[in-house]
Length: 235
Image (cartoon, rainbow, N blue to C red):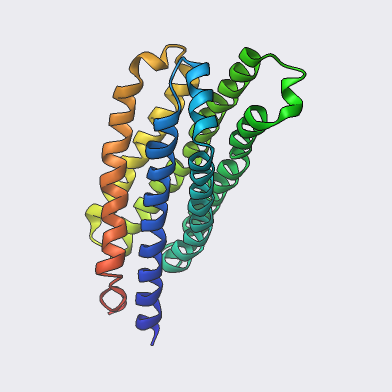
């Protein structure tokens, strides 16, 4: 009976993980990347005004991602608690902290909508000022996202260690997650520490996204297709 419960939990975790990956990629790479024009506040503002519904869908997609993150934090804690209860709890706290940071960070996107669609603001600020303020909040959202990924990076490292030690999963999955965590941390701290980060942004994005996508998608698919091997670790 215990094995059935854990297998069902693992499948649920896989569905949540897939939802997180899909909604996160959609919001960041299909919505914001298509609307935000780096260095051009006017073009960005006009894109968002013309595609307000798409911009809001992106916010909703991010919200769905955060909801699933909270649920997944609990499930990973339950699944990996037998391996090391203290580390499993710590991993859950770091993932929940990331979710809290990203949740508050969504306010930046609502500020953009308020500035561009609120008639009251146009009586106080000129058009160029509104566009510049909107761009400022979009850039602040990007920084907030990076801060959230610092906590997520630590979570991934602890999670990877627990996965590698558990025997529930192939050890390589844990190693991939730890490698991905280093990418998240390196990229996030580079944004904080490097004034000329924009010059190297594409390189850093590749360094982070490729290993992270491979690691998290592999973990997601394993949970969906294979589940966990509780019987082998308990024998």
